[in-house]
Length: 413
Ligand SMILES: [Ca+2]
Image 1 (cartoon, protein in one colour):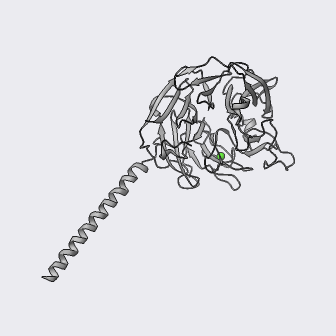
Image 2 (image 1 turned 30 degrees about the vertical axis):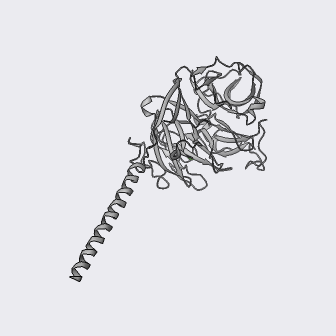
């Protein structure tokens, strides 16, 4: 009798343990279902190049579980390129043809064109590009922007500053503070995003101007093509920049070996500079930008020429002394703008990156851990828009603009 009882109790306990294990198993698999989906990219890659490390491309898909809303605030912008939030919650937006406008997202009201900007060379990818507000904007009304400036022998990616008039109808005291060198007569790869660092100085992304004769200048420290530069609001090189003591180099250079870097933002917790870059076919990149570092273009790349031939002699994707991208896309996104999510309304988005894709026609949500990408999601892919830029506002919402003239608000439901 006693032994029967022991057997019974043992069986009972075993069955309880089994149940507990299977519940645990179920919990784990449901977490995996939400967090570890198949990669969002299902199209064939352009190349069979091997990534440098696991998770450098085609990471597991993720899906936001918090309900969020997507609202179109306006469809009436004219080829918007850059967006920032004003201190009162309205949005200041550049329009490629050479003006800015202010949108009140609460009522969808758009101001007339703010005038007084220098003429832009709007051929190809040129025009009025990115913008940043002075950290002291409330008191000084200063705006900084990049644009393509026509000169006698070609054009430049140029950085200027000016004061928004009190009636917000025009820009005053316009001053050019920096011109990317050399002058070149082209129409592609200007870069063109500008942001403030934590000390009131500027980072500016500058492209290598695309053509065969300028491409190699991404590796040449005597030019600003294919660089991220670090300058004061007067356009001077920061004294601590990595090449200030090196003879025959431009002291404003912060990092080099870029193709057409655009999106720039500082990580909300670490303060580190991140950038996305238009690569060739199959080689768009996400990079963590470190001072003095070579990002490899055109020596290493995960892409091929748009017309199909391979790049580089030898054709390599990795090289000592050249930094690997944190992540790359093949096929490409055409990543133009990006922002970290600094809000708290949607906790699962905390410190995630949101990158606007032009050709891919979606906004990529990138989840990071220890400077590695651990998840990717596509937002707004049903909208059919070429997304140009995105910003995070103080109200906790993300605001994104599309080339076709739309302004979207993405917010917690
Ligand atoms: Ca690179």
